[in-house]
Image (cartoon, rainbow, N blue to C red):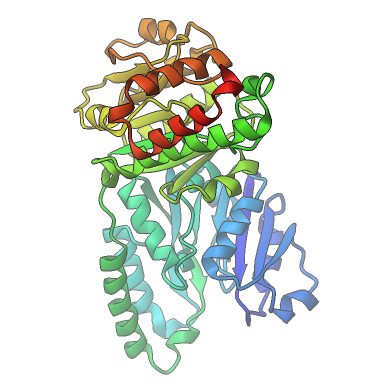
Length: 437
């Protein structure tokens, strides 16, 4: 089965009965345990798991995210170590909705805590707020799209994650089976601990509430120092120059995103290769989600991301990161438009596009038909889509040295109205003019 079961292990946890249960019921699933490196119990235990990873200064959020990154399966099941899955069978975790987060109802291992479980299940059914002890199941693509667990939190990472998926209009699917969890924290103080948990839940709901996102904006971005980034330019220009050029492009793009008037309603996603992600994290923290490029064709990446965005948030935007003349005002103008099953494009001089905004489901099919990196991209989309608006201004994306010369000319003409980051690029090009003129 295409499922990775991810189990975070805290410093002092030492009861590993769950692993035996999982091996008996879910033989073909990948089991990944991620523990704090100071847990001596897990080092000495002979555990039948597929992957065991030790993390320095681990938290539950760090362990869950690390497990997701290590997983080799299409679907993820985040499960607490103190869970008992005797009520759950293989069919319960099969056929998951790829656009929904699934969870179970709750039961405690102490009979006198039934009313606490009833309160948790009421909260889950009526308010759509399950916690981590009920476990979360979802596709890896959806997990990455949402942005994983917040590693800045030492507690409440599950609650914050649920509010985030609510803001992205991701469906919650409640599986009508009960997962059993430990009632040890309620021992001898059930009423007090229940009231404490309720109060903490209310405070966290106030803290973690997020405004509804209306647009999922995927930015296509590469490690600026990668040989794959501007590979055609590297054939005629030296790597150091191209690396700095790429950094300038990324800084212009990120500055535009930070200044968008609509930014609070936008879910920013970096579209990149997994090996580039760590390097890109050093440039900007505006990206909350990610969509990993596994060497698919560009047209399929755009189509898959659009499908995920339209099935959740409802509107998708795609943006290239190598359009130095594009400014925040131009983006704001189109992002503020009210859409009626329509699509808006910024076309490029090579026959493609550098920006798209759409809430038309037909765009998924149309993007999949596009032959990437050809001069027929916009022609194909124009013929395929019914309601389409193309901006009058045609942009230059930088692929070859002639593009760079054209961009240099455009920046010089518009010098007085350039943004701070665009002026930095222009100064860089002036200093290195001999390299490409």
